[in-house]
Length: 336
Image (cartoon, rainbow, N blue to C red; front, side, top):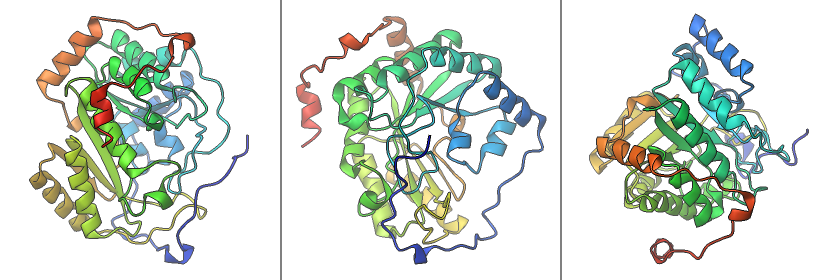
């Protein structure tokens, strides 16, 4: 199906720096594990963000037998100016997809899995129940695995976000993507303050027993002061894990690369972020949200609490159960 509309182009294309510097190097696959991972993903008819988003690290990650699974299809309802995932009318959710993802984690013997999804604004819950079912299926099939989710904003619907948190992921990731000034140009429909609120709410919904994570792309024309302000904003909203990476233009129709930051600059930002109070920071030209995700392990109390809570209940929600409940006072307070 052809795209409904293309990515937003609110910047002058003439700003684009076409020549990549020497430090932007992508390794080609030469590891047999890469091909076995690719075969497994094809066999289970799964979608990975590694391929759909043209991640520069997919050769390395797949060569190590890791992958980030993208559920709810490969067609997004949003058209962000940086993203290679196609924008089109999505297909219906696949009922057996959670089980297939779980089987993949078992076959790959993963100790850490990242589950993400396209934005599904066509669904009342934004795909939240599908996240919930996938988390529960993975945990049942692969006990002890660390489960990280990288989610859209669910249009800031508390009841949808609560469904994801009820499944008790260990790490909740929602990307800020860019600084506040550039958000309207870079992100489709998403809002800077909304993303911050979603991150804080997710943690509050499980009484702090989840590690919250976010990522920012650099090279879109942001200033140093704006980057530091974004770090402070994330810390103020209880985010403890940060990723910083270089924006790379997927196609000429996407936003221009205004600047290629030197690896030394990324190293400096990492030290600044750690000094500010982040528990873990991954910062480098080719760093993406899921890059070496397993290098960070949540605190033991988070792992134990999530497992105990998940074992205590199993929610079987049906569409008729998705009535919007009244917002809790503590959630509403976060909007102030």
